[in-house]
Image 1 (cartoon, rainbow, N blue to C red):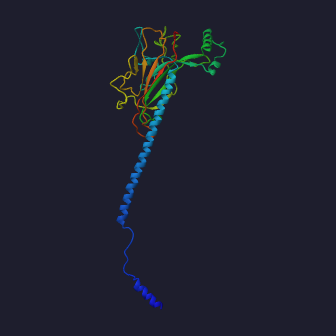
Image 2 (cartoon, rainbow, N blue to C red):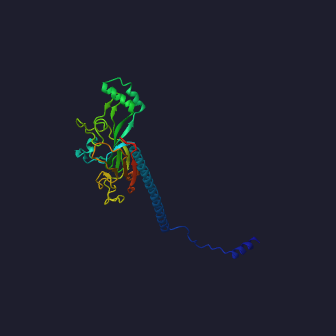
Image 3 (tube, rainbow, N blue to C red):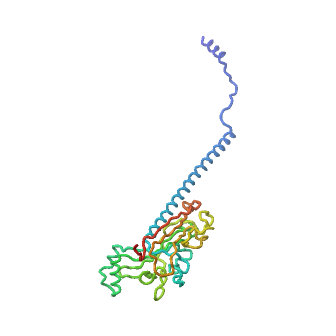
Length: 331
């Protein structure tokens, strides 16, 4: 019975015992698949790399913009405390027809690459430590005692502030930007305890005038020495001062309007940081009892941040009006 069932199944479902067709992929098919996957992977990797680079560029731009704005805010805050701003630094000062040497001749000789852009006098309040160091004003000569008493009454001195720009050397290990801004101060005293005057300091209200400083009735003072370690850096990653390939400044049209002097005057080699200072009446050595205003232009360049190259930023403009006025006449 079982044999008949088996024969019936064989006839009903015939089985072929011939050679079976091989299955799987050939070597050529595998190589083609690998090449296709490689192209897809390369495209994805290029997209990811470009996305990361774009993110880094945008971060560098936004970070540089923030730094430039902070630098401008600092300079504006500084200028608001100024009592006198110079409208020329490199040229002779023709006051009352007399040609006084340029102000830059009396700024420390840092090096030829540093360009003074903004110079002004501001008041510095005496700190509690300064007042304590003065004591009771009973030491020294009679003149020193009187000077000490005057300081205790005024509680402030005048300080010369100068902002400078310098190009960074190529492959500088510390400063990675195209150029940087520096801030120099010439304070009245190097030591309050014994009222030691800083080298090269002449008081513009007692011994000279703002317009003719540092000329006095006797002789010119020595040039102040370069501070130890150089002038402090305000901000790095400022665009190169001679970058004329950026169309953000109209080189054919002077950016300063009538009644303002451009510092520096050379707009081809100094266009990433410059100022427009309201002109001063030089027909008299007396100070005009009015507020001065200054327009500041600053352009950053993120190139160098994280080893990437980015186009320079658009030039930022701001304006500051000095709050301090000498000999102001009430209306």
